[in-house]
Length: 123
Image (tube, rainbow, N blue to C red):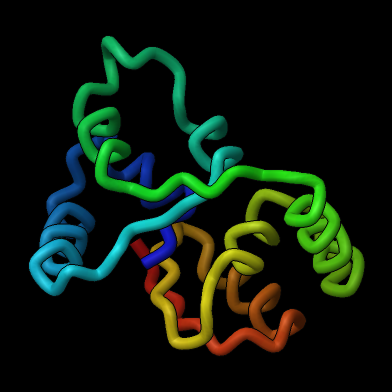
């Protein structure tokens, strides 16, 4: 399961629906992933974000290197959008993987453009 910034913000707000979904993923041994710039969008002060800090210990945070940056940028260009962070979420997603997002419209558009068959779940 890929987590976008909306999913991480929901965790920080102690959103029970999102917490339940993540617990179910954990019980099914479904790995959680995001990328470093998603973390940058939501991280402000670890002393005040204890729940988010605990969650991030169990999330694979994919590094944004030049190759991923180029792929995300190319996707932004093809999709005619302006958010490379959401584009990178789609780039790291595998086919049939769940993307937990607060912006399902943009993620679906980017996934269609990238020809990725992802399962977009609104949080």
